[in-house]
View (cartoon, rainbow, N blue to C red):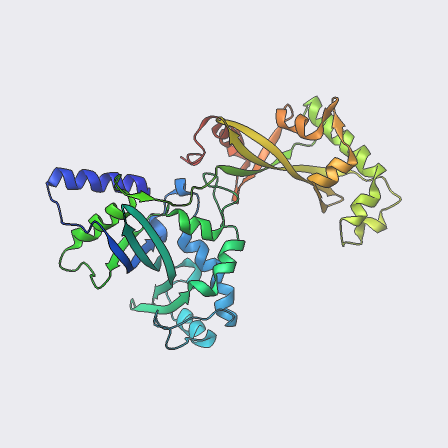
Length: 363
């Protein structure tokens, strides 16, 4: 369930039951604990914070390059050997765990909500069904990593979203499990009400990160030997001519010695894939060329937009970027963001990109 839908449901629930609790109008920075389930993250969010965060830090936990503490009090280090031992006894690998706990501080002051993240706790289950407490990771130890790394995103998400900004967006589904010393055992409903007040109450202001609508699109221009579109034939002819006239550009762009072995032979292009960045302006997709991948003699070469501009490629008296944006050739989508698109789904996904809201590319 999406967070907004969850909030609306809570509001309806409170109104329909007639139940009201006396919530504090203001509270100073209060330690809270929220729980995220990997299985409850909706596709429209675009990312799965639980799985992605586990995958991001896992290599560093294995090597011990990232401190893993027994608890948020940071009194004792778990250590990489103990971490490995815990995982060996687990029912599922660490990266496939379902549960993530985020330690935060919440504050409401002058009808404005703000929060700070303290760190993350990770749990699992043994093969015998007992709980595993892997430990706690301090936010300060991975802040730079979170800010500099893009979170994997499906077709409904944003392609250029860092882990840090994904966390600051609060768009993921979560449940408040502790507020100060209150673990809600005597009054579970107050958890829902405090969460609704902080995240959904229209009388409260909150400056959460707004996720920009950006897509990275990769598509394959079908080769003329499998497609009769004259535009496809023209593209392959022009790129083949350009590559053979500018072999040094290719040689400068690869560490492989393969192209030196065929330097005096004609180069044939087996496949052309285009990488583009799509943004929206007045609800109209705007396409920006990022790079082109060429498969030559079964070896991949990537040319950046700057390199392509220097080559001065023109097709039908149009600049390369302008020509590609019109999509008069036949192509198959390969990826939207980090989601791979099956060939038989290419046309459906492309039409959806042009017609649907961009957080509803996956239905």
